[in-house]
Image (cartoon, rainbow, N blue to C red; front, top):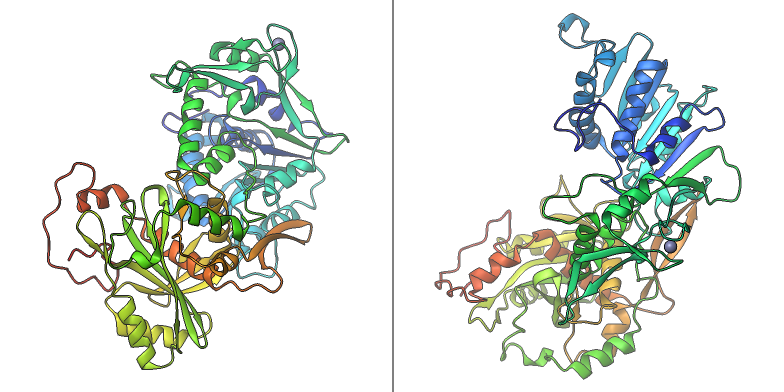
Length: 594
Ligand SMILES: [Zn+2]
């Protein structure tokens, strides 16, 4: 039973045709587990899992373990998905003890539900205790691409392996893993799916009966006379006879489809892969169908740059995304591109205005024992960026005079064509080697927004993690920012989200350092992880400075539209000139009006 408010299809569960076989697998003695690689929303992935859990509570005995990426998502799932299902399904509601009576409160909490013949434990993959406590017949793992590679603060390792160990003693143990995928070669669900029989939903063309799996490149649409995209004309094109089918025909094809295993060998675990083209939800208001909506979303994602495209490919198409960063763009190409474009020169500043697209400035400082290498980066809408300044200041941060010199530099103001001046909205200083002198600098420059930063590398953890114990310390996931930078360096059209502009007078050695690292795969217990590695004989100071400048800007989460209004750009009346307000110690003030 799907409770009103938790599902777009409330009421008793009615399985879609492609869900029937998945549910039947659970009682098939030849099948010991499911791997479901589905998009985030539109194929009812979480409803499937909830249904299995509800059914298991009702009909089977034994423990159930439901693992989500972390504690808060576990709690959230229990409150918003499980509780409504339990309370609206009469047969299981009465089974589960409630906490109504305080004396009986041992039975049921948000993360543990018990009944006469079993229990349901809900755990976060980041917690060792939650996973190791119970013996369970049915283990469910939801959104496994967001699981940590190993349980933090524990020697037990991979949370999925730990969870599965809980079910080893059961002859009829069953596991379900679901997720939308992430990056190719790193995605856990892709890896697990590759170990199954790899079933895909084949549909038949109504015109020629050719059976195929609907992929994004089968979606076609027309363009208008001015080259504009006409999303309303979106159709599915048969790869065999090239006849085109509208959204209603697509839905009918999906209803009549069937799962076909594409993996070669017989496997005990079954894998199911599907994408948003299989959805049977009613089309959204104001759209002629899902195809029109998806084409609009695709075009918006394409316009938004690499990041939005990655989201579209992962969450809608349920395909892994290949970051085009493995071989960064060669330094010579970047060097020649900037010289030929001749947009601006570093030597223009401070006399001339900075490029009009710059809406905020951030700075990253790489600290060496005898010098500081720093980059001033200008950012605009969609995180399009302009490298404004790169310089080496000779001296040691341990000397007070040198800290004063650096501090003076960080006070620089740049003229913007709007007539305003921009100061540095944030500065990140690498504190890996000399934390004490960096904290001294932060103290001496307070209340200016200067932060210490410490780098680590992992593709499964958040990009920026502010320290809870040390104020003004940001732990930076440099792998994420390096991958992002290398993808962005590959963009060729200015105006695209994330495009990187460089001044025409930047040296070749700057670019050589910028692209000095490469992504390599490391295999650890059968799992592939990707790490950045410095190429032989190269230096990487400018890469580190750039990553910090970029990360600082992302940390602030700037509202570029609001900044535009403040700068009086795009028709808005220029804001009144204000006296500079001192920034709060706790937060940068963004733009300094002078
Ligand atoms: Zn056909």
